[in-house]
Image (cartoon, rainbow, N blue to C red; front, top):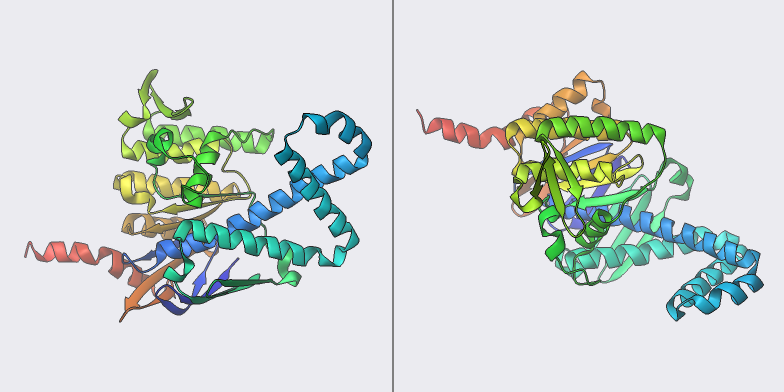
Length: 375
């Protein structure tokens, strides 16, 4: 996805956005950065979820059908009714798809639409609180929402150019490491993006991949050099290990939790090639020096095939990322979007070298106000 247009979404009347391998949203509080990120997260997650369930379902159905009599006799008596119903559902889908192969793409779009709406409603509550009528247009899909009616059109001719994420993560706060064991885990009681991250923190995405293993080793070395230790799973919570000492995660600083969460998501292989990471204001708990280190780690992830979307109010992170991207020759893989509100309407400016001072004015303006107090 490179181009995105939003109409009548929250305070945005009609604006274009640039989405790249690393995408940055900045602007004053309340301008819609978080809303846009959650909107994009929900779409990526709905396609990832549908693709995963669809693929697994078809594989299960195909395996069952290959020797149905044996399955019925030896396996089915040991399954719960819920599991049997799930398999029968997949069997029906498999048969329908084989009978109506031309309908396959349409079926997938219906599943995506259903999943997308459910995820959005779990995150935002009633979608009409955002807007009762909005449109999203990108290079790969068109979406319209009109008072509870949602329609999605996937541009089939461009599907091969769009990589559906293998894993999608949304970090609202690194303190989730500390709160994990206290959070309600009943389905539907927690917003989808938080519930999904909790499940990811529960799981070890183990697989064998030499290239990925080498990246993990390198990432651990770099992140450990910053926080002087490692974050590890201790069952129902996490611990911080530093210089052969073990600390409960509650006693680790917020900055350590931030870098440590990123480290842990790499070590448990949730963040790997094909993943997309959304992170709200990663600078909140970080010293300026560590903010720059976080940018370096984001670039490491991008080079390993992870897409990054984050919002920020930090001039350190924005300027450092821009400078590093230029120096490394990857500026075309990084986009900056500056949201600005005038008379209740938010518009976006896609930043480049010609208008970069707009971002510096936005983020460094308060420093000028401070300096005036000394004169």
